[in-house]
Length: 461
Image (cartoon, rainbow, N blue to C red; front, side, top):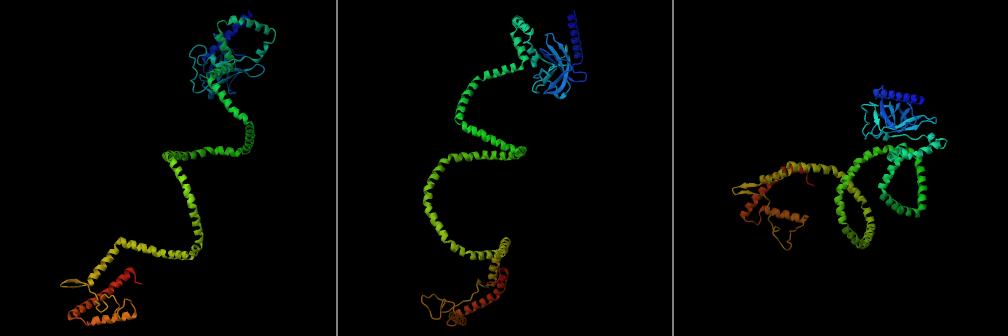
């Protein structure tokens, strides 16, 4: 009777806790609640901690038994940074101390998975449902040790004897319970499945490893030396840890500055691809050219040696020209202002048309000094008539082509004779007088013209 009363009391307490949990699924203070289903609560009690990565984030609000004889543990999460829980979340009950205290270790899951489904009605209404496949209930160490004690060992033998009868046709359920009891078994099955799917790759890995390790085995001394040198390098790097850390800290800025350069290099590579292709196609021709260039180089060796000897011999005369070069340099420096002014003058004259105007002035000035009669314009000139004006193949006394004193005197005497009109007919004498008069007028008009030319282009030297 006492046993029945105790069971009834436990059921009433569980129902009361379920009613409270149903009435406030999110917690009285607005906390986040999760209804996690476990195969075994493993002596956990209300008030014990809920941790995420070792940090306390809440506590166990209540515990109850489901219709499937599983433990429903309501977890109250007070830290909003670890909510909501997602579909790939996991929770496991773990021992907290040697005196049997427990805590719930949870992983909220990843944001890539959907959030947990919220219970709309029934037990745990308002809280978020975490199924039994996402929870783990490890067997406590003290329970495992109890199997070595009497009468636990006898009772365990009875349980094992009756286990086949009790679990008949329920092997899959037993397998699922075992995997949930020890998550490592489930993870091991997943690893074995992955390895089974990669058996060919593993076989090839073994073959390739043998091919790689065989040369390494023959070079084991070099490999050992590499390890020693790597240790020396690591020690040296450790002594420069601050510098290496500074280099790593400056690396993002360097890469940021390097990025435009790499873009330019990529563009250059793209633009240089056709050139490289053409160079590749002409590589054979270039090879032949260099091959044929070798005999030419051998033949040119003698000429280059002789050229070097000639250069050595001409070094003295070239050095002797240094004073002349210096004088030419001084002359160039001194003539630079005059050349600049002359360039400006000629450019100005060319731009303003002064050269053409000067030619026109000379042309019209010459025409203005010419005579004009009833027959038209004529050029005034000084007519020289003597025995020396004719072409002769042999020397004539008193006539010479050299402008010496004697010849000048002879020319003057001849000119004077011509002016006097000696040995000329009367008509020729009149024509000579008219020409001399025109020459005199031209000479008189040429004096102002000469002054104008001296003003424009400078006096003659």
